[in-house]
Every structure is written in C-alpha cells, then in structure tokens.
Amino acid sequence: MARHGVGLAAVRLGQGFPFGTLAINILGSALMGVLVGWYALRGGSQPLRLFLATGVLGGFTTFSTFALDGVFLLQRGENAAALAYIFGSVGIGLGGLLLGLLAMRTLL
Image (cartoon, rainbow, N blue to C red):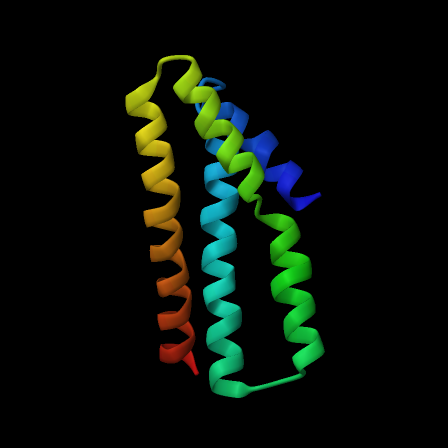
C-alpha cells in the first residue's frame, strides 16, 4: 500500500517519466541503509532483520518495474530520459543507502 501511495503522489510530477518507481527505489535504498546501519551498530533479532529487509523493503522496492520503465522509455525513443532514469535510480539509490548508513553511524 505504501508503494501504491507513493506512486499516486508521484503522478502529480507528470506521467511521461516513472517518478513513482524512482522515488520508491531511492526511499527504499535509504531505508535499507538505515536498517543495516541500525543492525550493524545495535544488533537485534536476525529473523526480524530478514523480515524487514527482504519482506517489507523488498516488497516496497521493485527492480522489475524499474527495468520495465527503463525499457518503455527506450522504446519510445526517449533515450536521454531513459539514461537519466537508469543511472539516476542506481546512483541515487546507492547514495541513499550510504546516507542511511551514515545517519545511523552518526545517531547511534
């Protein structure tokens, strides 16, 4: 439901670019960084960590939709938008994960 809500909110930014999937994957990456940072510094239940990382965040983010949106942009001839989306998703997603890790290291 959270993914659907973000997708609906992102429609306001325009429908020609997959803003929703981009936002979901970046937010999910940042939250994964927070989760991993928390567990690295504070520890905790391994089953809960797996549930949150693979269940909740794995269900929130979506690689298959990311790939599909990238292909649709390429098929429509929007090569610059496709490259921005693909590299932006990966690059900003990695950046979000790193920021989440750093936030936990700083706060904890």
